Image (tube, helix red, strand yellow):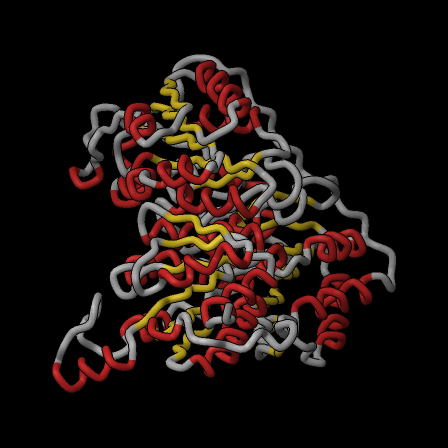
Length: 540
């Protein structure tokens, strides 16, 4: 049997340990799905294109690289939100798109015949995905495929960002040469790293209260062990951003907590914002970090995207892994400073009374162990999630920067297949409405996330942003556009085939439901009803 264009792409993916292809098949990309089993890659068919993108993102964040393919136009444009989030949050997803043929394009130009799922314009998908990927290219001939595919996948791995590959749908089964050798997936040093490390370590040692803020690039590039060693050699305090929570085990000397403005714990806020030398390693700064960066600019060293900026100086090129190694070498030249004792998690209180927002997170905190991968959605409870006592490394995943509601439920599909931990999703009912059909995908493909839907009947986060006074008085009415249609979550989940479903409204019942769900081998949903006027403890 001839080795084809589809085989080439799948072979390159399998070489990088990709064993799942997410998507919604269509005629444009069907040959890719047909060939996938020959390369040990199982197709995970999602209930929607957006869900497929989120799932591939969750897989990429936990496995290291993800792949997704949906229909041209109607599928890819629906999915673009998920890929935009992957771009912002450094998640390497390979989007593989079957595109129009040369004849389709010629007929459009000459006769104004609109090909399937086309806007009547040239290269709409390619143009759109250039905005949200690190590389986007189209192959119209089989001879072009090896170079385009190799460049795209290598770029995804090196940059930790999504890429887009469009294949003329008429060449999927065309003969293609086998890959010629391993992909170049490392970035060479810039040559500046040792000099920069000398300067940075000197600044840290000269400071009275230095602090390292660990960012998401440390997890993406597999540098957790190295950075933990750097912290120990410097004897410095450290914290993480929400997106990078649990990149390192949250314990030990120097550990401060998760910095998640504007509602960070006071001790963490003071430690980060009052440090006289702040080293941010691999951080992506959302708008909520604006005050920190602006106020700390003259006493901050920023390391991200292959660049280093020391205080208000110009950016300099530096390869992250080489720089971290150089920092360790430089730090080892002197004994570490005495680091303060690390912060300890606050033990949860007893389970008693009607369920509140705060009690939901206390009961989840009490249930956590090394088996859970916590995936919070973007909702009122995201600041509470920052303070959950996640155990060990790589036990947390969220859309902290892009902040797309509904991401958590669909990302849990990919995460359940890419991680050795079991996803524990915590989602508001508004976010759950966005991707609820994902439950069907979980059932079909044997995924086992436990989903806790905090049901208060409103888009609580939006209500809080536009009118927080609503939460001050039980007689206050929410904005009409923030009110949700009331679902029976248990019946809904059961209708989609979820075998474990429970509704709870007391703290004790939530404790029991979490324990039972953990013991159950399969997807589970717990609907936790709370007062719509209630707020998490982290919000005023």
